[in-house]
Image 1: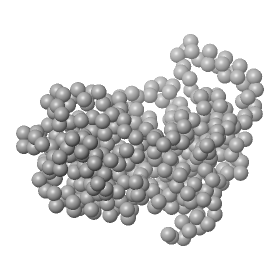
Image 2 (image 1 turned 45 degrees about the horizontal axis):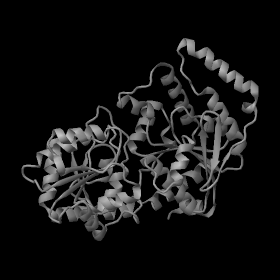
Image 3 (image 1 turned 180 degrees about the vertical axis):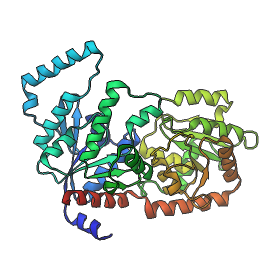
Length: 430
Protein backbone atom coordinates (compact mmCIF):
# COMPACT_ATOMS: atom_id res chain seq x y z
CA UNK A 1 0.00 0.00 0.00
CA UNK A 2 1.41 3.41 -0.88
CA UNK A 3 1.46 6.52 1.28
CA UNK A 4 -1.93 8.11 0.42
CA UNK A 5 -3.68 4.75 0.81
CA UNK A 6 -2.13 4.20 4.25
CA UNK A 7 -3.10 7.71 5.29
CA UNK A 8 -6.70 7.26 4.09
CA UNK A 9 -7.03 3.97 5.97
CA UNK A 10 -5.82 5.62 9.18
CA UNK A 11 -8.59 8.24 9.20
CA UNK A 12 -12.11 6.78 9.02
CA UNK A 13 -14.36 9.03 6.99
CA UNK A 14 -18.07 9.75 7.16
CA UNK A 15 -19.23 9.31 3.56
CA UNK A 16 -22.60 10.23 2.05
CA UNK A 17 -23.12 7.82 -0.86
CA UNK A 18 -25.75 9.43 -3.10
CA UNK A 19 -27.74 7.20 -5.45
CA UNK A 20 -30.26 7.93 -8.24
CA UNK A 21 -33.31 6.85 -6.21
CA UNK A 22 -34.39 4.80 -3.20
CA UNK A 23 -35.01 1.77 -5.44
CA UNK A 24 -31.23 1.42 -5.74
CA UNK A 25 -30.92 1.19 -1.95
CA UNK A 26 -33.60 -1.52 -1.81
CA UNK A 27 -31.76 -3.50 -4.51
CA UNK A 28 -28.36 -3.10 -2.87
CA UNK A 29 -29.66 -4.17 0.52
CA UNK A 30 -30.93 -7.41 -0.96
CA UNK A 31 -28.89 -10.52 -1.64
CA UNK A 32 -29.51 -10.54 -5.39
CA UNK A 33 -29.30 -7.10 -7.05
CA UNK A 34 -30.24 -7.51 -10.70
CA UNK A 35 -28.41 -4.73 -12.50
CA UNK A 36 -24.64 -4.45 -12.93
CA UNK A 37 -24.75 -0.82 -11.74
CA UNK A 38 -26.42 -1.87 -8.48
CA UNK A 39 -23.88 -4.66 -7.99
CA UNK A 40 -21.04 -2.22 -8.66
CA UNK A 41 -22.27 0.37 -6.15
CA UNK A 42 -22.97 -2.34 -3.56
CA UNK A 43 -19.37 -3.56 -3.77
CA UNK A 44 -18.17 0.03 -3.36
CA UNK A 45 -20.31 0.67 -0.27
CA UNK A 46 -19.42 -2.69 1.30
CA UNK A 47 -15.74 -2.16 0.56
CA UNK A 48 -15.65 1.29 2.14
CA UNK A 49 -17.52 0.05 5.21
CA UNK A 50 -15.07 -2.84 5.40
CA UNK A 51 -12.23 -0.31 5.58
CA UNK A 52 -13.80 1.30 8.64
CA UNK A 53 -15.64 4.19 7.02
CA UNK A 54 -19.23 5.15 7.82
CA UNK A 55 -21.32 5.04 4.63
CA UNK A 56 -24.85 6.46 4.51
CA UNK A 57 -26.96 6.07 1.39
CA UNK A 58 -28.77 9.24 0.35
CA UNK A 59 -31.45 8.96 -2.32
CA UNK A 60 -34.61 10.69 -3.53
CA UNK A 61 -37.85 8.81 -2.89
CA UNK A 62 -40.33 9.98 -5.47
CA UNK A 63 -40.36 13.68 -6.28
CA UNK A 64 -40.75 14.98 -2.73
CA UNK A 65 -38.88 12.98 -0.11
CA UNK A 66 -35.22 12.12 0.41
CA UNK A 67 -34.17 9.04 2.38
CA UNK A 68 -31.09 8.35 4.50
CA UNK A 69 -30.28 4.65 4.81
CA UNK A 70 -27.75 2.24 6.22
CA UNK A 71 -27.78 -1.54 5.89
CA UNK A 72 -30.95 -1.99 7.93
CA UNK A 73 -32.69 1.32 8.61
CA UNK A 74 -34.16 4.11 6.47
CA UNK A 75 -35.33 7.48 7.67
CA UNK A 76 -36.76 10.45 5.84
CA UNK A 77 -34.43 13.43 5.78
CA UNK A 78 -35.96 16.58 7.29
CA UNK A 79 -36.74 19.53 5.05
CA UNK A 80 -37.36 23.18 5.94
CA UNK A 81 -38.67 25.79 3.50
CA UNK A 82 -39.55 23.27 0.77
CA UNK A 83 -41.90 21.60 3.28
CA UNK A 84 -44.06 24.68 3.53
CA UNK A 85 -47.46 24.86 1.91
CA UNK A 86 -46.59 27.81 -0.31
CA UNK A 87 -43.77 25.84 -1.92
CA UNK A 88 -46.05 22.91 -2.66
CA UNK A 89 -48.70 25.24 -4.13
CA UNK A 90 -46.08 27.05 -6.21
CA UNK A 91 -44.67 23.81 -7.63
CA UNK A 92 -48.16 22.64 -8.63
CA UNK A 93 -49.03 26.01 -10.16
CA UNK A 94 -45.85 26.11 -12.25
CA UNK A 95 -46.46 22.57 -13.48
CA UNK A 96 -50.03 23.53 -14.43
CA UNK A 97 -48.74 26.55 -16.36
CA UNK A 98 -46.11 24.46 -18.18
CA UNK A 99 -48.51 21.88 -19.57
CA UNK A 100 -50.43 24.02 -22.10
CA UNK A 101 -47.08 25.04 -23.62
CA UNK A 102 -45.87 21.45 -23.89
CA UNK A 103 -43.08 22.02 -21.40
CA UNK A 104 -42.24 18.71 -19.66
CA UNK A 105 -41.49 18.25 -15.97
CA UNK A 106 -37.97 19.61 -15.53
CA UNK A 107 -37.17 18.51 -11.96
CA UNK A 108 -36.71 22.08 -10.74
CA UNK A 109 -38.78 21.70 -7.59
CA UNK A 110 -37.73 18.10 -6.89
CA UNK A 111 -34.07 19.21 -6.96
CA UNK A 112 -34.85 22.10 -4.61
CA UNK A 113 -36.45 19.60 -2.22
CA UNK A 114 -33.45 17.28 -2.58
CA UNK A 115 -31.05 20.17 -1.92
CA UNK A 116 -33.04 21.32 1.12
CA UNK A 117 -32.94 17.79 2.59
CA UNK A 118 -29.20 17.50 1.93
CA UNK A 119 -28.58 20.87 3.57
CA UNK A 120 -30.10 19.46 6.76
CA UNK A 121 -28.58 15.98 6.53
CA UNK A 122 -25.04 16.43 5.19
CA UNK A 123 -23.30 18.71 7.73
CA UNK A 124 -20.77 16.59 9.59
CA UNK A 125 -19.92 14.40 6.60
CA UNK A 126 -16.37 14.39 5.29
CA UNK A 127 -17.20 13.80 1.65
CA UNK A 128 -20.18 13.27 -0.65
CA UNK A 129 -19.84 10.57 -3.31
CA UNK A 130 -22.58 10.51 -5.95
CA UNK A 131 -23.25 8.08 -8.78
CA UNK A 132 -24.25 10.29 -11.71
CA UNK A 133 -27.83 10.13 -12.95
CA UNK A 134 -30.14 12.13 -15.18
CA UNK A 135 -31.79 15.24 -13.72
CA UNK A 136 -30.39 14.87 -10.17
CA UNK A 137 -28.43 17.89 -8.90
CA UNK A 138 -29.77 18.40 -5.37
CA UNK A 139 -26.76 16.85 -3.65
CA UNK A 140 -24.30 18.97 -5.64
CA UNK A 141 -26.37 22.10 -4.94
CA UNK A 142 -26.16 21.42 -1.20
CA UNK A 143 -22.43 20.70 -1.41
CA UNK A 144 -21.82 24.09 -3.02
CA UNK A 145 -23.71 25.84 -0.25
CA UNK A 146 -22.09 23.82 2.55
CA UNK A 147 -18.65 23.82 0.86
CA UNK A 148 -18.56 20.06 1.25
CA UNK A 149 -16.26 18.06 -1.03
CA UNK A 150 -18.33 16.47 -3.79
CA UNK A 151 -16.97 13.51 -5.77
CA UNK A 152 -18.86 12.23 -8.79
CA UNK A 153 -18.83 8.64 -9.99
CA UNK A 154 -19.15 8.84 -13.79
CA UNK A 155 -19.77 5.55 -15.55
CA UNK A 156 -21.72 6.88 -18.55
CA UNK A 157 -23.00 9.99 -20.25
CA UNK A 158 -26.67 9.01 -20.17
CA UNK A 159 -27.57 11.71 -22.68
CA UNK A 160 -25.20 10.21 -25.26
CA UNK A 161 -26.24 6.69 -24.22
CA UNK A 162 -29.88 7.46 -25.03
CA UNK A 163 -28.76 8.85 -28.39
CA UNK A 164 -27.01 5.53 -29.08
CA UNK A 165 -30.17 3.61 -28.14
CA UNK A 166 -32.23 5.70 -30.58
CA UNK A 167 -34.15 7.22 -27.66
CA UNK A 168 -32.67 10.72 -27.71
CA UNK A 169 -33.69 13.40 -25.25
CA UNK A 170 -35.07 16.37 -27.14
CA UNK A 171 -36.00 19.98 -26.58
CA UNK A 172 -36.48 21.08 -23.00
CA UNK A 173 -35.51 17.70 -21.54
CA UNK A 174 -32.19 17.66 -23.36
CA UNK A 175 -31.46 21.24 -22.35
CA UNK A 176 -32.27 20.48 -18.72
CA UNK A 177 -30.27 17.24 -18.62
CA UNK A 178 -27.23 19.02 -20.06
CA UNK A 179 -27.61 21.93 -17.65
CA UNK A 180 -27.72 19.70 -14.58
CA UNK A 181 -24.88 17.43 -15.68
CA UNK A 182 -22.69 20.45 -16.37
CA UNK A 183 -23.52 21.84 -12.90
CA UNK A 184 -22.52 18.56 -11.24
CA UNK A 185 -19.32 18.29 -13.25
CA UNK A 186 -18.33 21.84 -12.32
CA UNK A 187 -19.14 21.26 -8.64
CA UNK A 188 -17.13 18.03 -8.35
CA UNK A 189 -13.67 18.24 -6.80
CA UNK A 190 -12.86 14.84 -8.25
CA UNK A 191 -14.61 12.70 -10.87
CA UNK A 192 -14.09 8.94 -10.89
CA UNK A 193 -14.37 7.60 -14.45
CA UNK A 194 -14.80 3.90 -15.32
CA UNK A 195 -12.49 4.08 -18.33
CA UNK A 196 -9.98 6.28 -20.09
CA UNK A 197 -12.57 6.77 -22.86
CA UNK A 198 -14.98 8.20 -20.27
CA UNK A 199 -12.21 10.53 -19.12
CA UNK A 200 -11.50 11.70 -22.68
CA UNK A 201 -15.23 12.18 -23.30
CA UNK A 202 -15.50 14.50 -20.30
CA UNK A 203 -12.47 16.52 -21.40
CA UNK A 204 -13.46 16.80 -25.06
CA UNK A 205 -17.26 17.04 -24.84
CA UNK A 206 -17.80 18.73 -21.47
CA UNK A 207 -14.54 20.69 -21.11
CA UNK A 208 -13.80 19.17 -17.70
CA UNK A 209 -10.34 19.90 -16.32
CA UNK A 210 -8.23 16.78 -16.78
CA UNK A 211 -6.54 17.15 -13.40
CA UNK A 212 -9.71 16.33 -11.47
CA UNK A 213 -10.45 13.14 -13.44
CA UNK A 214 -9.38 9.75 -12.07
CA UNK A 215 -9.80 6.50 -14.01
CA UNK A 216 -10.87 3.50 -11.92
CA UNK A 217 -12.09 0.62 -14.11
CA UNK A 218 -14.63 -1.83 -12.74
CA UNK A 219 -13.37 -4.74 -10.68
CA UNK A 220 -14.23 -8.27 -9.56
CA UNK A 221 -14.68 -10.24 -6.37
CA UNK A 222 -11.76 -12.62 -6.86
CA UNK A 223 -12.86 -14.81 -3.94
CA UNK A 224 -16.36 -15.36 -5.30
CA UNK A 225 -15.23 -15.65 -8.92
CA UNK A 226 -12.45 -18.20 -9.02
CA UNK A 227 -11.81 -21.47 -10.87
CA UNK A 228 -13.91 -24.29 -9.42
CA UNK A 229 -13.80 -27.43 -11.60
CA UNK A 230 -16.20 -29.34 -9.33
CA UNK A 231 -18.81 -26.57 -9.48
CA UNK A 232 -18.33 -26.38 -13.24
CA UNK A 233 -18.83 -30.15 -13.62
CA UNK A 234 -21.97 -30.06 -11.45
CA UNK A 235 -23.40 -27.21 -13.50
CA UNK A 236 -22.63 -28.94 -16.78
CA UNK A 237 -24.36 -32.07 -15.52
CA UNK A 238 -27.44 -30.00 -14.61
CA UNK A 239 -27.42 -28.72 -18.21
CA UNK A 240 -27.11 -32.30 -19.54
CA UNK A 241 -23.73 -31.50 -21.06
CA UNK A 242 -20.94 -34.05 -21.39
CA UNK A 243 -17.29 -33.23 -20.81
CA UNK A 244 -16.54 -33.30 -24.55
CA UNK A 245 -19.20 -30.73 -25.51
CA UNK A 246 -17.55 -27.29 -25.80
CA UNK A 247 -19.60 -24.65 -24.00
CA UNK A 248 -19.49 -20.96 -24.95
CA UNK A 249 -20.99 -18.63 -22.32
CA UNK A 250 -22.23 -15.05 -22.53
CA UNK A 251 -23.40 -13.17 -19.41
CA UNK A 252 -25.29 -9.92 -19.78
CA UNK A 253 -28.48 -7.89 -19.84
CA UNK A 254 -28.96 -7.87 -23.62
CA UNK A 255 -28.38 -4.14 -24.00
CA UNK A 256 -27.65 -2.80 -27.48
CA UNK A 257 -23.94 -2.64 -26.68
CA UNK A 258 -24.06 -6.37 -25.86
CA UNK A 259 -23.73 -7.59 -29.44
CA UNK A 260 -25.68 -10.82 -29.02
CA UNK A 261 -26.78 -10.66 -32.66
CA UNK A 262 -23.21 -11.09 -33.90
CA UNK A 263 -22.58 -13.81 -31.30
CA UNK A 264 -25.59 -15.85 -32.46
CA UNK A 265 -24.66 -15.47 -36.11
CA UNK A 266 -21.04 -16.44 -35.38
CA UNK A 267 -22.12 -19.49 -33.42
CA UNK A 268 -24.46 -20.57 -36.22
CA UNK A 269 -21.45 -20.65 -38.57
CA UNK A 270 -19.81 -23.27 -36.34
CA UNK A 271 -22.63 -25.78 -36.42
CA UNK A 272 -21.58 -27.73 -39.47
CA UNK A 273 -18.02 -28.29 -38.17
CA UNK A 274 -18.86 -28.46 -34.46
CA UNK A 275 -22.43 -29.72 -33.97
CA UNK A 276 -21.47 -30.78 -30.46
CA UNK A 277 -20.76 -27.18 -29.34
CA UNK A 278 -23.28 -25.38 -27.15
CA UNK A 279 -23.99 -21.71 -26.44
CA UNK A 280 -25.39 -20.55 -23.10
CA UNK A 281 -26.72 -17.00 -22.77
CA UNK A 282 -27.05 -16.06 -19.10
CA UNK A 283 -29.22 -13.08 -18.14
CA UNK A 284 -32.30 -11.15 -19.11
CA UNK A 285 -33.21 -7.87 -20.70
CA UNK A 286 -35.50 -6.09 -23.11
CA UNK A 287 -33.90 -7.66 -26.21
CA UNK A 288 -33.88 -11.27 -24.97
CA UNK A 289 -37.11 -12.26 -26.75
CA UNK A 290 -35.82 -10.78 -30.00
CA UNK A 291 -32.55 -12.69 -29.59
CA UNK A 292 -34.46 -15.89 -28.83
CA UNK A 293 -36.38 -15.38 -32.07
CA UNK A 294 -33.12 -14.83 -33.97
CA UNK A 295 -31.69 -18.05 -32.54
CA UNK A 296 -34.76 -19.91 -33.87
CA UNK A 297 -34.45 -18.18 -37.24
CA UNK A 298 -30.80 -19.31 -37.45
CA UNK A 299 -31.84 -22.88 -36.73
CA UNK A 300 -29.82 -23.13 -33.51
CA UNK A 301 -32.50 -25.13 -31.72
CA UNK A 302 -31.22 -26.81 -28.56
CA UNK A 303 -27.62 -25.78 -29.24
CA UNK A 304 -28.34 -22.27 -27.89
CA UNK A 305 -29.99 -21.92 -24.50
CA UNK A 306 -31.25 -18.76 -22.77
CA UNK A 307 -31.38 -18.98 -18.97
CA UNK A 308 -33.36 -15.83 -18.20
CA UNK A 309 -32.49 -13.87 -15.07
CA UNK A 310 -29.83 -15.48 -12.88
CA UNK A 311 -28.85 -13.93 -9.54
CA UNK A 312 -25.32 -12.59 -9.40
CA UNK A 313 -24.07 -15.21 -6.89
CA UNK A 314 -25.37 -17.96 -9.21
CA UNK A 315 -23.62 -16.51 -12.25
CA UNK A 316 -20.45 -18.07 -10.80
CA UNK A 317 -21.83 -21.54 -11.55
CA UNK A 318 -22.41 -20.87 -15.22
CA UNK A 319 -19.08 -19.16 -15.81
CA UNK A 320 -17.31 -22.10 -14.18
CA UNK A 321 -19.15 -24.45 -16.54
CA UNK A 322 -17.79 -22.60 -19.59
CA UNK A 323 -14.90 -23.54 -21.83
CA UNK A 324 -15.00 -20.16 -23.57
CA UNK A 325 -16.48 -16.85 -22.36
CA UNK A 326 -17.35 -14.00 -24.71
CA UNK A 327 -17.68 -10.21 -24.55
CA UNK A 328 -19.13 -9.19 -27.93
CA UNK A 329 -19.50 -5.46 -28.63
CA UNK A 330 -20.91 -4.00 -31.86
CA UNK A 331 -19.06 -1.71 -34.21
CA UNK A 332 -19.90 1.85 -33.19
CA UNK A 333 -19.46 5.25 -34.77
CA UNK A 334 -18.19 6.67 -31.49
CA UNK A 335 -16.12 5.20 -28.68
CA UNK A 336 -18.14 4.02 -25.69
CA UNK A 337 -16.96 4.17 -22.09
CA UNK A 338 -17.70 0.52 -21.37
CA UNK A 339 -16.00 -1.21 -18.45
CA UNK A 340 -17.71 -4.62 -18.62
CA UNK A 341 -17.90 -6.36 -15.26
CA UNK A 342 -18.40 -9.66 -17.07
CA UNK A 343 -14.90 -9.35 -18.54
CA UNK A 344 -13.29 -9.24 -15.09
CA UNK A 345 -15.56 -12.01 -13.78
CA UNK A 346 -14.61 -14.29 -16.67
CA UNK A 347 -10.93 -13.53 -16.08
CA UNK A 348 -11.09 -14.16 -12.33
CA UNK A 349 -12.81 -17.48 -13.04
CA UNK A 350 -9.84 -18.53 -15.16
CA UNK A 351 -11.71 -18.70 -18.46
CA UNK A 352 -10.45 -18.27 -21.99
CA UNK A 353 -12.00 -14.96 -23.04
CA UNK A 354 -12.84 -13.71 -26.52
CA UNK A 355 -13.76 -10.01 -26.62
CA UNK A 356 -14.26 -7.24 -29.12
CA UNK A 357 -11.17 -5.09 -29.60
CA UNK A 358 -12.42 -1.69 -28.53
CA UNK A 359 -12.30 0.79 -25.71
CA UNK A 360 -11.14 -0.26 -22.29
CA UNK A 361 -11.22 -3.95 -23.26
CA UNK A 362 -8.01 -3.34 -25.21
CA UNK A 363 -6.39 -1.92 -22.06
CA UNK A 364 -7.18 -5.12 -20.16
CA UNK A 365 -6.75 -7.94 -22.67
CA UNK A 366 -3.51 -8.65 -24.52
CA UNK A 367 -4.32 -10.66 -27.62
CA UNK A 368 -2.94 -14.17 -27.35
CA UNK A 369 -1.70 -13.67 -23.77
CA UNK A 370 -4.73 -13.38 -21.49
CA UNK A 371 -7.50 -13.55 -24.09
CA UNK A 372 -8.31 -13.21 -27.77
CA UNK A 373 -9.39 -9.96 -29.41
CA UNK A 374 -11.60 -9.76 -32.49
CA UNK A 375 -12.88 -6.76 -34.48
CA UNK A 376 -16.20 -5.41 -33.15
CA UNK A 377 -19.29 -6.67 -34.96
CA UNK A 378 -17.32 -9.16 -37.07
CA UNK A 379 -19.14 -12.51 -36.99
CA UNK A 380 -16.53 -14.23 -39.18
CA UNK A 381 -13.69 -13.24 -36.87
CA UNK A 382 -15.68 -14.19 -33.78
CA UNK A 383 -16.57 -17.58 -35.27
CA UNK A 384 -12.91 -18.20 -36.16
CA UNK A 385 -11.77 -17.29 -32.63
CA UNK A 386 -14.32 -19.63 -31.04
CA UNK A 387 -13.33 -22.41 -33.43
CA UNK A 388 -9.66 -21.83 -32.61
CA UNK A 389 -10.28 -22.24 -28.89
CA UNK A 390 -12.54 -25.25 -29.34
CA UNK A 391 -9.69 -26.97 -31.18
CA UNK A 392 -6.91 -25.95 -28.76
CA UNK A 393 -7.47 -26.93 -25.12
CA UNK A 394 -3.88 -26.03 -24.04
CA UNK A 395 -4.39 -22.51 -25.42
CA UNK A 396 -7.66 -22.22 -23.50
CA UNK A 397 -5.89 -23.24 -20.31
CA UNK A 398 -2.96 -20.88 -20.85
CA UNK A 399 -5.21 -17.88 -21.56
CA UNK A 400 -7.38 -18.71 -18.56
CA UNK A 401 -4.46 -19.05 -16.15
CA UNK A 402 -3.00 -15.70 -17.24
CA UNK A 403 -6.42 -14.02 -17.09
CA UNK A 404 -6.92 -15.24 -13.52
CA UNK A 405 -3.47 -14.01 -12.52
CA UNK A 406 -4.12 -10.58 -14.03
CA UNK A 407 -7.54 -10.31 -12.35
CA UNK A 408 -6.05 -11.05 -8.93
CA UNK A 409 -3.05 -8.76 -9.45
CA UNK A 410 -4.80 -5.74 -10.94
CA UNK A 411 -8.59 -5.91 -10.90
CA UNK A 412 -9.87 -7.00 -7.48
CA UNK A 413 -12.44 -4.96 -5.57
CA UNK A 414 -9.98 -4.80 -2.65
CA UNK A 415 -7.50 -2.92 -4.83
CA UNK A 416 -10.28 -0.75 -6.25
CA UNK A 417 -11.45 0.30 -2.77
CA UNK A 418 -7.93 1.26 -1.71
CA UNK A 419 -7.65 3.51 -4.77
CA UNK A 420 -11.11 5.01 -4.29
CA UNK A 421 -10.43 5.56 -0.59
CA UNK A 422 -7.35 7.60 -1.51
CA UNK A 423 -9.39 9.67 -4.00
CA UNK A 424 -12.09 10.42 -1.42
CA UNK A 425 -9.54 11.28 1.27
CA UNK A 426 -7.72 13.58 -1.15
CA UNK A 427 -10.96 15.37 -2.05
CA UNK A 428 -11.88 15.71 1.62
CA UNK A 429 -8.55 17.32 2.45
CA UNK A 430 -8.33 19.57 -0.63
